[in-house]
Image (cartoon, rainbow, N blue to C red):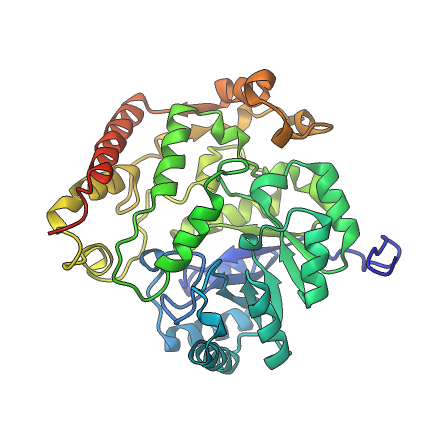
Length: 413
């Protein structure tokens, strides 16, 4: 069948390369050039098009900043991938004003030197390909591509690359092999996420992000992030069940034809981004794996815009700022807002068995009861440790936050 290419007709995979989150630090770029970083990805804090992160997580960035940043990247042979990856546009994509706004944005981006974009909706992919054929378009993880059939759908629409739904299939090797055989386009895996395996909140979370990234006066509480963070505290085996890829295991995926890997997270300190690039480039890491996976709890501060809390959480018509204290206390303790002297969560890389992935071969974790298996629980018992004081206090804070949300205590004046 013409839509089923074999390894004989599919282009041979090139050298392994990385797509890295952008924090727009110009001093980091020359250091990245020493590693196989093919691109960095990011976007303006607000551009009128929904995206995959709430506005409060965005790094401050002007058009002049982005122009200088792209020129610096280009000087070092690194591309910039602009994110238009919202899972929902509120049906505004069918209106003339929205399409004019997107067209104007893409025209501006082209003038800045952008030639790569990431989308998560089929209509936007078609729009970009028809109006801006010079752009390479990647399909983001929010499209939830996890089968050969879904991959073919996007390739037939014109996708140049697809980020697979790594949360669920990074350790499903038969599925990965089948998808790689099904399409010719580039396929990318997220290597260092810590999301719950087959997360039941995934769609809800993605849609919440899409709307929170847009122009809105509505307060966004990241319930899903808080819920999964608490679940990892109460069940540390979730740190092992999450389908991340160890730096040491990249060769397993390369052997299947996967040579493009995405590294998270946007906006984190430069030293942490460089630590992640170095570990995956060198294919070894002997320290605390949580340092490669988490998006919080760093020793260095995260760069945020001035008056960050007031801009994004104090909505005078909806929220009494005094009632935000449970949320802000929780954020500080977890290390969202300020540095922590030490990461209170440890996933000891030395305690992960060298043949770790063998435990997932020949089985479909999505079809199994974890309680009947116990593989990840046994490894977590050796490798995962959480500061008892941190765990106790965090769970207490989550209980306070739950009570405030259930009673509507964050809203109203």
